[in-house]
Image (cartoon, rainbow, N blue to C red; front, side, top):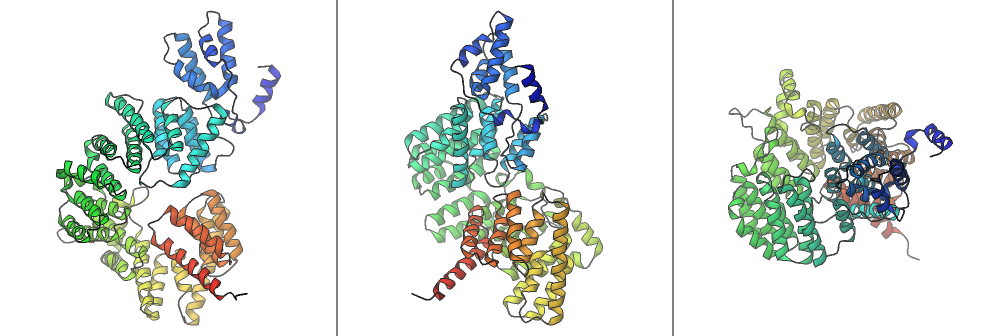
Amino acid sequence: MRPMLLTLLLLVPLSSVSRADEPNVAEPNVAELVEQLGHPLYAERLDAQRRLRDVGLAAFDALREAQTVSDPEVSDASRRLLNELTADWARRDDPPLVRRWLEAYDAGYAGRDREIIKGLSRVPGEQAAPALVRLARFEPTELGSAEAAQALLAVPERAIRQRREEAIAAAVTKLTSEYGPGRRPAAQWLALATEEADDASAVAEWRRHAEAQRSLLDADSRDTSEEVVATLGWRWLRAALAAGDDAEAVAAIESLVTLSEEETLPRLARAVRWSAEAERWDTVDEVVAKYTERLKGKRGLYTLADVAERHGDNAEAEQLAAEALAAEPSDEDATVEDVLLGPQVMVANELQEIGRLDWAAAEYRAAAKSDDPLDDPLDGRAAVAAWRLTDLLYDAGRYAKAAAAIEPIVEAIDRSRPARGEFDNLPQHDTDPPLLPSSGDLIARQRFSAALAARGEGDHETEMTLLRKAIAASPSDADILIAMHRVENAPEAFVKETRRRIDEMRREFERVIWESPEASDGYNQWAWLVSNTYGDFDKAVRYSRQSLRIAPETAGYLDTLGRCLFSAGEIDEAIEVQRRAVELEPRMQVLRRQLNEFEQAKASTTSEEPTP
């Protein structure tokens, strides 16, 4: 490199230049250059290194493979070049949150690579997909590469989100156009995911990849992990079910449930559910017959109940669900999280996630009965169960039952300061995110739910009394303020109090935005409060869009934007946005209720338009 050019490059801030930003066209003689790394003449070796640096990441696969050759000059130089070429991961177009994670990855914190990949996988929506594809393709270690791909390929549900698959495909296509197709295993998995068809060839390919990684795992290789093997197994099963290949589906399930003893039942339950969803009843029958003993506990009985209902046998389903509810949790239902949650809550949560809300509510209700002989309402695990039951019932619009579920706890902490302190110091508050709300938020939710129940009965005096108690317990809760604004035929004093509180909170949210302009919550809170009450609806739309620029593809923020657009008169766009929110969180009934409201308003508007 010429001295003047080197000087100019050194003057450019490192944050603005990254090898990840600058694709290189591969030279036709990369293999020869790699071989030249072992040339007897030092000058020739240096020349090969220089030219390979110029080639850049297009030489990645050749250098990666050269690390294992017998010539130490070649292997050592290849390793050094790989580290140089993969020193910077961020690109200019990466979203801010993704860039922060990649900067932590660049810093090379020892032992934190897996944590950072998991952090990227939790970034909302698909905004981290390009970064994870880059890591899967170019991370120097095989394990890091595999786990980045695993984060992209994980399939918690049989029905894969189309937008995510499209984002992965776009990122893979972009890298392939820049650097050519990748040869390492993780690159092949991602390529297969983008090309996957519901035929035998896709099934065979996923099986080949899953079994190859399983062999590495069984040999205690450091190049893979159980999570990686399991994810490939789920892809194999999904392809087999789509292709209608029962034999391959059973083989995939066998591979999954034999990975580890402690995960056998959760994986078995999920695999059986997937098979029932796909209506592959021969697969279901064969697997259930083979693992009958493993399906006799609480979780297993619910699995069989779910299968029976999907098969149309509702009476059998309810009988099995009743047996499951009565069954004591067994070792099969236990997990390491039981210390703070309890096995019943874990089972109830799984039922809620698959949409079995009545069964989940019954389990939460049973778990909410304290293990304490005196039925102490401040038992931590029972409190978590009661809180989750309230949340489930509130989302379903069953407000009276939602209020009743946590009433014993609220009564205990409302009448005694020591009891409130005891509740706020339960270990369930110390998790991230907390398993329990603060005492103030708990009281507010109970009063708020009871107020909404009173509204449904037309008792507006009780409604107003309870709303005042709720807002006193949690003064910044926008939903309570919105409910106060919507009280019918409220007296003037109540209206004035409500407007005063709303105006105060609008100013408070503006202060939060001023102090933390890069945080999304202030924008969202202001927009939600204003769009549901009064004020500048166009500004609410702008603020809501800003929250989504900071945290894209967040269902709650999309829900807010839908309301803002609706209030601003943009009904068609409001419906489009709200449908996206429902797509991201299909089991949140409150999102569906708002979508129904918008669609009904649209239908009403259309029906009122004069015919030409």
